[in-house]
Image (cartoon, rainbow, N blue to C red; front, top):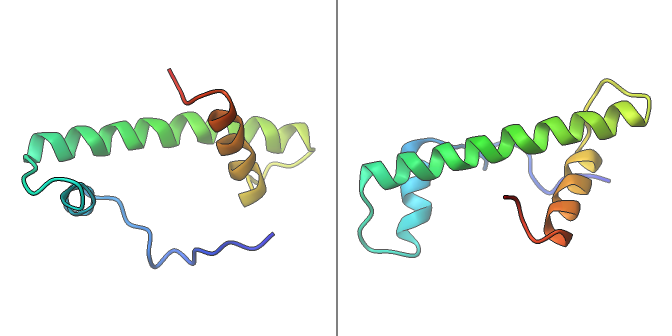
Length: 82
């Protein structure tokens, strides 16, 4: 399973988060963008831990895209996190 991302289109900074948020709201405070970036970072940590468990259960140390996709599918089926 190949990824449709090559890494060049994936960056997460306050500025990048703010740009994304501007797609939905004309005005966004720095504090809001920082908080959103923090939430995204927390989500990445949670999903990374779960993906590691999936990789280990398949006898691997390397987390693959398929592990991350599986975690995302599980989270979606369960209605999100928290």
